Image: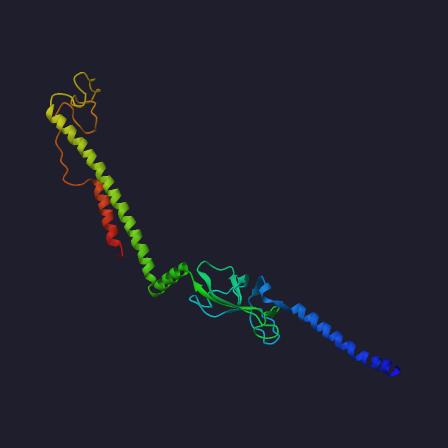
Length: 265
């Protein structure tokens, strides 16, 4: 009996540290051992590395290509959400703030199995994301425009100049047409009054007859209160003819021709 007691006393100092170490290891594994299917979200940062127990740490965010290229956009923070389980692996959806010309293509979330590669339990903090950056439809249009401009930088400027020239020509034609209408109307008024005077050489025109008031002192009786200037009432005025467009029409046409001749196109 005494020997048994002595044996227990001798072994107890050895077994107690071993049991304490095993308990600490179990508690430590519980803190870092996580069931992958229960992970609801991951937050990954640019410039940070994953934790490693059986393998070396790797960057949390890694670009592996895409139509936009890895240098087109560098996400600072990416959040990936657990969208369900397909019976084999978790289905992830990853989002970040990026321009409308880019989007995520194929993504792969990888985590280190705690005891072996296919372990359903993973090491906490060991997950990383591999992604590709694709161009959206807007990004493809922008890339095409930039490529055309790079090949011919004068093309866009020339198109803008053509649009401006066309607008100026329309404005000048509009002004010329307006001047033409005004001059034509004035000429028609003069022609109508001339016809009235020819048909009634001894009568008044437009209501200015014998009953009209006499002309003021110093004015010849041939002049009456006429509707227009430089027109005779009661006498046949001298006929004047116009052999071409008026002053304003000529000025408008001259300005248009000067602009067209001075244009580089």
